[in-house]
Image (cartoon, helix red, strand yellow):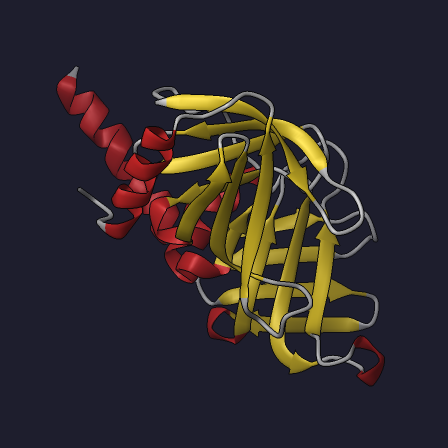
Length: 217
C-alpha cells in the first residue's frame, strides 16, 4: 500500500514539472499551456509568451489573466499590457496551479482556494476595496493563508512566501501586504485590508508575523 502511495506521489510531481495542455476558450480561440510558456490561437493567428516574459499570471477556475512587460497604450497611464482568457463552459483552469507555480513562483496569483484542512484559526471578514469590497472568511494555516469569497476573482491563496508583511491597527483590523502587483502603483506590492467581524487576539497576529519572518520554521 505504501509503495502504491509513493507511485501516486511521484506521478503527481511529474505532472507539476511537465505539461502540454490545450483549453478551448469562450471567444472561440485556444490557449495552450506547456513547458515553454503560453500560446493563444484564434482566427488572427498565434501569440506566444514564454514564462520569462510574464510579469504576473492571475489564476481563477474560469479565467486566466496575464500581465506582460510590454508597455500598454498611453491612455492606461503606464500600465503594462495584459490579456484575459475565459475558459469554455464546463472546463476549469484550476488544475494548472501546481504546474504554473513551478514556472512562475511569486508571479502566480492564485485567485481561488479551499478551506485548509488544518486551519489554526479563521475569522469572517470584509475586504475593503477602493470602490467596492467583498465579504468572506480568512483562514490561517501553518503554511498558507486563504481568503474565500463568493465574489468572482476575490478569493486568494497565499503561501507564506507570497506575503511580505502583516499588521493590525486593532482587534477588528488586519492588513496583508503581498507580492501581488498593485494595479495603479507601477508594479508595487498590493495590500489587502480586512475589517474583521469578530475580534482577533493580538497574540495570533503576532505569531503570524513571526512566522512570516522565518518561513519554514
